[in-house]
Image 1 (cartoon, rainbow, N blue to C red):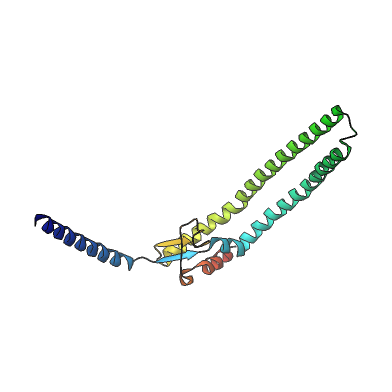
Image 2 (tube, helix red, strand yellow):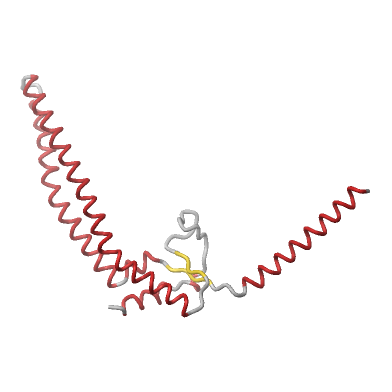
Length: 184
């Protein structure tokens, strides 16, 4: 009997706590205003974002042209070694293979340098845009009374932000895009 009374008391207490927390959460939820924004869309469609992307793309093309000739040189040397392998002495073959390895190492180093340079350029180009965008989002959120604005770039189970679903009616991407483009 003691245990039954204790179980009923605990059940009643749990039931009361559940409803009191539910009631408080419902009252607080009425005050919460949430919006989402697709940052990829805003950055991809804004004038500033497109200008930045063009600068980056120009540099990528510059590197691509520069590296294409080096790739051709490596491929020509590889074919030459394959064709003349049986004709060359072992010493000549080893020299050619060392030469190819040296060229490949230099090529990899230049690729790493180019990657680093692109990362630095991307940071220089995008940092001011992202800073402006952050200010615009904060100001917009405060002005319109939003409690939270979430990144909605990628929804669902692949989402890095944890946003699994959001209705399109709370998406403010277009408004933020207009504000960003008007800040020129």
